[in-house]
Image 1 (tube, rainbow, N blue to C red):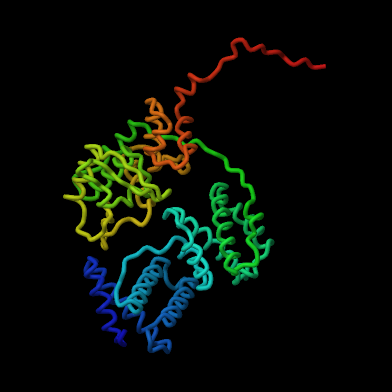
Image 2: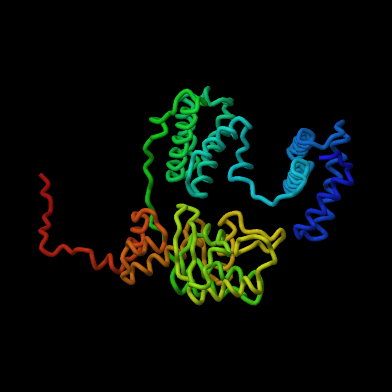
Length: 413
């Protein structure tokens, strides 16, 4: 790219922001920030605005944050502007994208990133599994770097053992078990490609006991109250109503609701054809009349104009789909609260409880477990059996009394 003056750089970046739909206030604020960053870089002796000078600027501001000279919120805004400048310098454009999972919290070296990219390239699995692998590996890489290990050939069994112990102290048993599985595959890849001296298979196969908890389902009456609390006259209300109704009627996971694309809806045949983010497997579900009407109402009268393939979009520009189901959980919690219902930390009455509610209702209605598994898209029928445990009425019918069973008191000598 040709050498740009400060004014040219700020102007061109802001023109792209304008094209993306940002407000005039945002564009003007960003212009001032870009000019300020560039002048600061020049003041510290660098005439070029490049990756190196931008990194030095970030380092200086982190020191200011540590000393309390700037707020954490201001620092986040500065980092966003720096990323925009760097993206523009490297590509000549601005692309809205969400950082890969774990990239901010657990930064890794170029060497580690290269190893991770090579490992991920060998895996043909769902997006959810890939994200899990990335998080587990980056968390482990970050721990190694903090321990002074920067080359996988220097990793010893002691390091692996210490990492497992530290993991058990900060994670749930289920999360730790998943992480060790991902790391076992990762080190097998490293060993097979001469990045590591051993695969640590035995250590990373450490048995972890996982406590299986039966999580509650939300009642039909509560679902009605949540849906009834939403103001469907507003654009955001139309979106929220359609997403929550979709979860309640189809049992789709939150990640599949926010990831639903316009092409996934077969209006002619009345079907939803979804590739599940968790399993990567396709599932075909009926598009019921009420769900279809809710989605149609949002798409035609509430959805912002956008080139995005996602059905459900953010309400702020740039109008893109949600990066994860976390946003949907926040929306659901707010609707739950507005309906006057109580929700406490750890009570599992999240958006996913709608899926459990559907599974329970099908089991209670006598739908075979195999069919419930197909509707919910379970790859293993074991996942479906949890809904049987929620069916207390039928479980009581199966319970045995003590009729005909002789009970004796133990004699004490």
